[in-house]
Image (cartoon, rainbow, N blue to C red; front, side):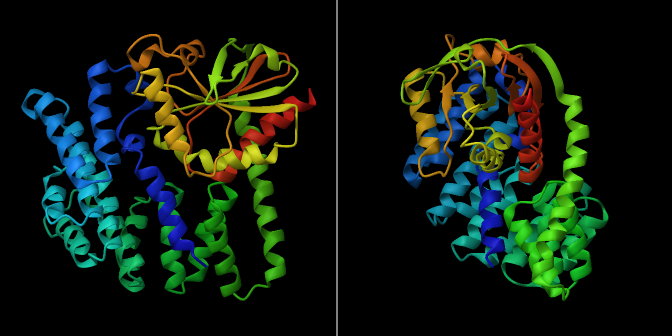
Length: 419
């Protein structure tokens, strides 16, 4: 059972979208002046560079155009750039990688990126170096609660990958006791560590709650089944148990969805997809339409895509349900380059989405047309439109749970299909 490998890939997917999900408010970012957009393009290019020389050249050009001493109010940009360059250095096994990691100043960017950088070190066989970096952050005297418990979690993660399970439990337990585990991925890692230490009851409780709350991925469900069997339960009784948990999720979702009910005419639009085909919203009257506003840099948007693919698959044979994924708020506003960026994003990924491009007649991220019509303040933002062309549900954000997302969307769509 390859729980850990898939779990790490999912983390990497979210972590490599330029740290945006933890560093910036999506809505606020879109309103920034173009200078921020240009800086972010540099950072993206540094992170995407395959060759170290290319990454270094882009980084040097970035510093020449935007000297750090002239932008002291935005140090996070420069730390993001250093973290991105450090990642490329690690992947290319450059000897200066450790120095570049050290150059990422203490603060939010270092806190958010250090665990991922240490995982990259682990991939190239530098476990000792990764461990030394994290242990330095956990040295006596560095007891700042936010930093300390973040690095405690990172260290436990590293130890888990090294199969040093008792030590991993030693470091992650205080984080849990201080309620420092945030999100389903971190809670799941805690459960996996408990499992490997044969603390099945505690692991079972954690994973069952994740399923019940709709926060479990397929890998987490596999972990729950592993614990279920380890506790001596019969395999044939597992599916009914999970179905019971899902019923609780359904009831909770029905109640929560009422908070997102709206009723107003959906602003019309005609957009072009990646193949040059025009799609007009008004022509889709008589169908239930789901709009998903997203951008390639948006961590929560990308993190929700596996759940969205499940939702698409669920309704793929229903001709009365349409999913449209509207790309907007990209920092790259040049139409040709922006289209290439989006096409490249989907290359090699298992998503079968109808992707539309929101036009931008200006030069700033805030100039995108359709997303402005819908009054979006942050992405991901989803709107579910009934057969008469009225927006009936307005949803936003992503909580990290595939089941919760699919259940929420399914209940909303089914309600409107019946109308």
